[in-house]
Image 1: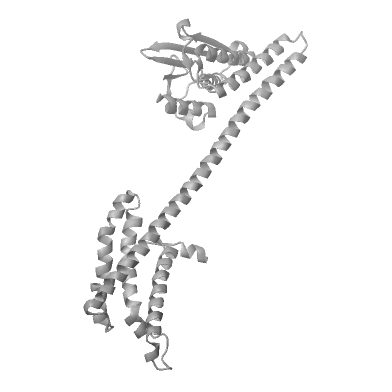
Image 2 (image 1 turned 60 degrees about the horizontal axis):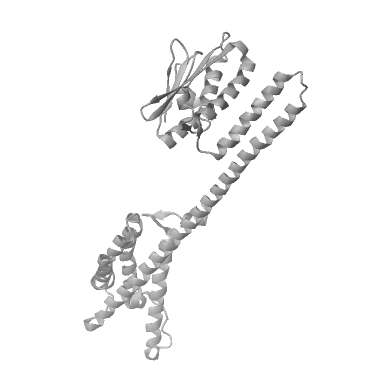
Amino acid sequence: MNKESIWHRQVGGIRLYELAAIAGLYLFFALSYHLTLWLNVTDFRDEDDLFFSLQEFMDNAGLQYFCMFATSVPIWWLIFRRLRHCKLQYRLLLHIIGLPLLVLVGGWKGYHYLCDYFGFNHLGGWGQVWDVYIPALFYFIQFGMLHAYEYYRSNERNLKLKAALSEAALKSELAALKAQLNPHFLYNTFNAISASVPPEQEQTREMIAQLSDLFRYQLKASKSNKVTLDEELQFVEKYLALEKARFEDRLQVVIDVPDALRERMVPPMILQPLVENSIKHGISNLIQGGQVLIRVRQKGSQLAFEVSDTGEGLADKGHLFRNGGVGLKNTRLRLEKQYGSELRISDNKPQGLKIEFAI
């Protein structure tokens, strides 16, 4: 295990490098305090007295700073780990309890008890005021640094998230531009091919023109959230005309939509994936072919859509969403997210499948 992974391990939600940083802060000031006292009494020392002895270090500052550090860690854990999801103003109120706790346990009474127990010296009388002042000062320094560090980490995460979102938005915009460019390029190419087809191959020319119209509509759909039902049905009819050229008499199409509903606004490309599914999974494998029915009716304030076929049918309806085409899955998600509408699949009578939804 490398050093970086060891230092990033956590103890009670606190990373080891964070714990070491605060412990290092206490050790630095403990040694600085010890050095100050040692220099202050240099004139009264023998020349052979050592700068550092454990007994003298613990008497001067070591034990007290260790007690303050040990007391601050649970307060740190509570405010910055256990309650990190609480609002800042509520966590700041906890310092009203944390400050006197650190002073009493880590710097004054608790520290004096340990000194008496282990036989170390501590201040007495009015000198004990330093055992209140120094821990309180350290509390403000330590937790001020921790709040600043928390703000820095939070701001760093927000900047990374903002950058990631900006990158995702840019990629999405580029993808949208590509999605518009590809159909535009293709239907222009189809028109060029159609113009080069000899007049005697009129059927081929018409099929190319229909395919070009499909891509033109797709380009329009990529720019619009709504189209008229009539435009959507014209697009489906062009698609079905191309399919009939392949299936010939094996494919029958019935479109049952009242004229009064054709000017209603609907999401683009909402019917074609369902019609394609009926042909691909229902009719294409049958020798005798079958019929596709598209029906739209007004039901209260909603438009009710039905796409049914007389194909093979399917026992496991969920199979279509697990293993079906991308278009069917996307249509289902669009209806759920945009309209809160469910795509219902049931058996058609006498055979085949029926797909229904309402918006």
